Length: 50
Image (cartoon, rainbow, N blue to C red; front, side, top):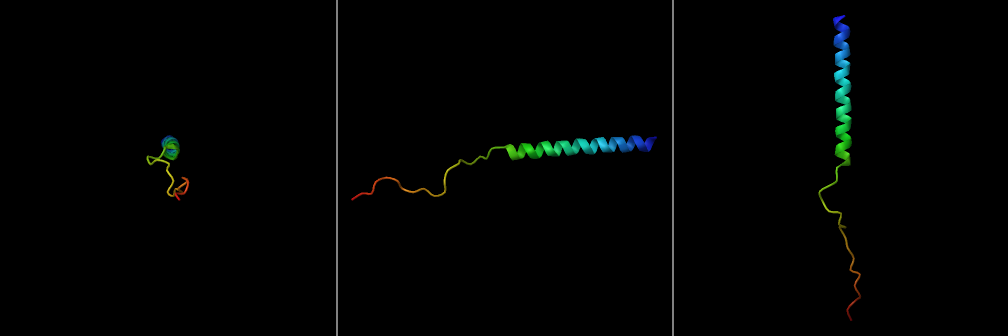
């Protein structure tokens, strides 16, 4: 009987850790980056000077 309880508790703890890790991974992927969304290359669109 003790082994069954130990196995059930171990499975419950493992499932809880797996759900926590999944929620943490989703939270990390959903985080917005700190850097601004500016282009690396910009082209001059002003009219050319004569």
